[in-house]
Length: 391
Ligand SMILES: [Zn+2]
Image (cartoon, rainbow, N blue to C red):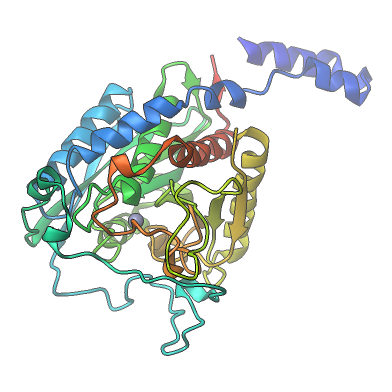
């Protein structure tokens, strides 16, 4: 009902009014009430729901069960345009481009981090736990016991259809698979839950968007971005056809909870979230769409400043090792994280990364709140980009 009023006002009154009065008759900003539909307890509950499937390692029954659960949740939110991408995964034929697909990984220079960034300060050990006995909780150990087998894979997505430009869409993603003999609560239950919560808000019957949004939960990220690579390989050339809207941008979310700062000299970390914790928005400066991706990153930073409740956002230029990488030379692509992937995660800023300690119980509300602020950031930025309004 607001639109006819705005048009009427614009046609009749605005030319004669000074700017201050123009502002006073504008429709209210539709974004704050949308952001208010995100909630810490709901976000936590969605992460907790994902941890019921343990680490959700690709190629296992628990991974397939998690895909089913995610799909059921998306349908329950009203995101009814649900589909699955199907592909085959053979672990012995890795991508020739390597894990990050950046081409920026000079060997033997120990100051160079993944994605082209430079390490500073103290670094702690990182790695992937492959030892089941390092998981002290017998319940979690049993949950994660089944080994992965090669073969058919599926990943689920749903789409909010735009009202005026349905054939143009933003892709909003996170990976639902994990590793390390924990519950993959942070990596990447936190990103998966963020995308699911956004699907819930945008799918509400009273929310209208001009452009479309695809919410997708990648599989096989941990084996080398195979799920997102499969999507790009199968669907890039279909853009503009009936099967696939044109891609306007790709926004990835990976590890959203933990920003306790740099390791101390003895390799230990602070026990609690640092008060200056931030959401790290990264683009890749070596990508073909670096200029547009940087612009997109700043749109997110501005949205954070305006709408996120607790934690600020920073922009960095070395996006790497996540599912936005396969998109970065075809469309503006960014990632949101708890820390910069290259210089911070790569330097041991997250001691739970790929470890048995990546459990729901490891994190407290200050940690979960960082993820919620990332959700507020993406929701607000996207709402502006797709022209969201509530009826
Ligand atoms: Zn991850």
